[in-house]
Image (cartoon, rainbow, N blue to C red; front, side):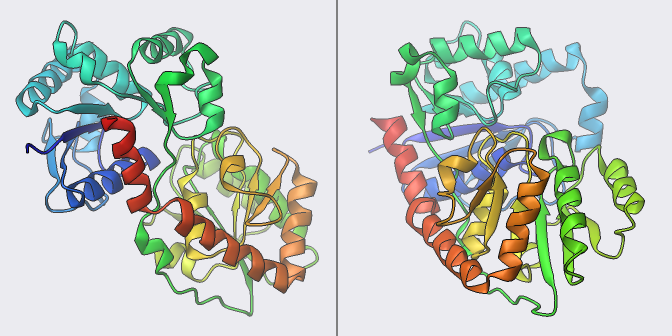
Length: 366
């Protein structure tokens, strides 16, 4: 019997949560007797690892900087042609563009082709926010409306779309790499180290986290904050830290793919976002067994955290409440341990690659 073939389309296999999810799903699919192809637009440093049996096809030999420099209408048309040719060559059973931009490009690339019927739309961020352009949002919504199947990450994303479409919209949470749950924590008891992880952009609202840590550090001198990530707000955030004279307590660590470095020695994890898709970093921290605090932002955290049981949810943008919950974690060692154990159990029960990939197969193949 011929193996079912899944073809994923992403800009690269580096940096973002969507790319990370593709690397996990593709790797797990080949273990479950399927074929997996990942088509990328450019090559990147520090790509997420994939199983050797996953076929990775790059449409160009460009690195990210070269790709961004070439970006124009003429090159997008050329890229669409290359994508169409590769999809036809692969003859996949299921075509899964990840990220709204890739969904639009795939739709254009397959214009007039019967293979368009095999496309499964995906929603990877808050659909009320992305795309920001109204015309592109209408285009994306129309793709979802016409598609035989759309995969979203959580119920809030599904409920953005009209109820008449819900039968063709399926919820598939993000899988969490099994390497996270295998990390042994080695917390430095002499300090209380908080970790924040994400792109240094407005969406992540690291200003709120910095302000909350500034408040807490007035009472607890051993509090430290490490922020991992890169982005356009790096200089702004560093100025914010310097202005508050917190350079010895708060560090912008840059991007790292070393999970042990990021999570292994931390005391707690905080997500301070104004909106999300399905926050991979929150899932990762829970998998390691960290007590976690998250803003109750749309979309994702409330699907993952049951506040007070496996983590803490705080109102979005509420500096005082966030400061208070960090203080509670510092003061109550027993609560920290209970939240950490429950967080890890949540991941092992609901978000392992095996469980999520089997659900993914069921959704696509039924």
